Length: 499
Image (tube, rainbow, N blue to C red; front, side, top):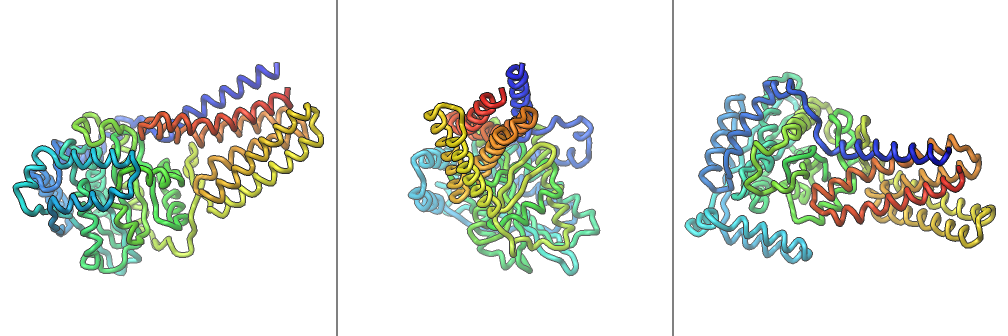
């Protein structure tokens, strides 16, 4: 009877965790009433203009989109600066030569594919016909008396020539415009705000690079935080997938006011393996403090003609709009936004109903050490007091030591990803300790349910994003092996002792 009860509890916990884990990275089913809000209607109207057809840099359509954005900002009361810059086909080729040597084989193929896609068809003819092409950044400011600091909101408004760009980056530009409308009506803003709509991002971050080179002409005081928004797909939720260093205070501040925040502290490791860059890369290279957001589900529409308003998940659009609005308003009215000083690197991950669990890398080190010490202690006790045959007992002890050692190594080498190993292993070792010392089935079963739930919640959204969002099912399958081993060992030990 105990075994049947154990199986039922385990399967129920696993199913709930899988549903909630995937739900973390999928947009909400938004009520029709939200779509009737004036703000959302504004976003849809703007998006319809921006993403009506492809608008690559230096194209006639891009000029029309630019004029529309300028008129919209002028109607809100903003004065818009058009920051022009020039580039040639040789500039694009030199970018390829500069970046290419640092890429691996897979990145080479992705880069070649993107570069060929950019330089074909009508755009290639424009490059041939003109010795020099012109890009235009759009810059608007909201300035207040005696500002506490300065914020910079960045999004690119060009698309590739093979996509209308509803998600990349139309929904972002439309959402930032709505934030500008909201802020223009407020009287409690305490910080200067600069809005940058960069051009020629798809050609190599050209607009953002030009802005940074001439930043002293734009910002009257140093910029405290940079927020960049982009998209790699037309589905899912906006992920905080990259930040500047020493990010504990910054991520904690965002988490306090964010609606269902989703972020994984290890994601920069994965991002560095990809070919993609965003405008934030330019600011990060110059030492700015900031946060980088993007959607990654719906990658099958990325840089394709199917990236249309009709194919865009409206729940994703609503979620991105709210993320930008909540973040923008929160930091705009904040008294103190210099969050990088005396901060440390953070370890964080999302959980349902709570938001982000955030701690420092020092805590990750401590957890790794404690896990290793506990594994050694349990292994020694297992050898001395186990009723199992000596060979089985020794194997169990070796597995415990290996799990503890692996946790310690991960905590020391990649602390921002260590929670994926340390937390599940530590929980199952504690369950093992409870079984050994107290032999309480009910307590151990509760611990098993907790361990199973937490392990699944940690891994399920990541496996889903890697398999579906990054279109790497093999990598996702390999990644799934680790939680399966952890769960398998823990359950086998529980089964033997508790039944």
